[in-house]
Length: 218
Ligand code: AP5
Ligand code: ZN
Image (cartoon, rainbow, N blue to C red; front, side, top):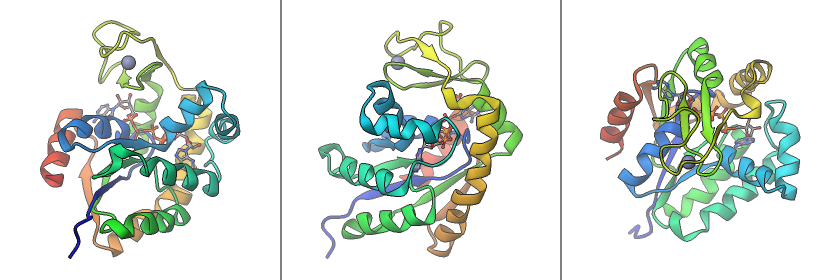
């Protein structure tokens, strides 16, 4: 007798796998919001909030922001009206503590629905991250070679300026990959054991990964 079920999709994959790109494409099609903890931290950073300043010291090194701060932030975000049918989680949970906290948040609504793992090799990830450009105003994600905007350095959606994320420098990217393998990769086994994991080949073009995800999620 579950009348309250929501769809919680957790996108997994190394930094640069394409989680944000795919979440942005899925939002409209599925009628669910993208919840990117990285984007929320960057928004706070831009607005110089207390949360943003705290997050900055971790993000600059490529380390995870402390769990209690991150978990509270996600709990708050999930209370908002646009999450009434669920959400596409992009970058959360990111370790076992966060995964267990998220399980509790999702439990009253039928639990986590599915966890697609977008798989790519590390060298592909590095090439993608170093060529990434992000819109300063709307957060849309581009790539100078694989997904360029119509006009260089200008967002197609709103004409906003594109910039390179501070943590997309080569030294920080190496630590982000290390942190992924140490802390986030165990979630692959965690969700596999719950029969929620589906693996996709993320090395294909953006549109092909999108089509596969869509058919899997509909
Ligand atoms: P976050 O913003 O989450 O970064 P990330 O996980 O490292 O992931 P990325 O945004 O780098 O990659 P993505 O998979 O979204 O790839 P994208 O679609 O952009 O986190 C940043 C920091 O915030 C963390 O280091 C941490 O400090 C903190 N943080 C965030 N969440 C946290 C949490 N839960 N707990 C604690 N701390 C947290 O694609 C990459 C590029 O490739 C783009 O240029 C794109 O155009 C291109 N591309 C995408 N798909 C394809 C394709 N199929 N073919 C060719 N190019 C493609
Ligand atoms: Zn924009």
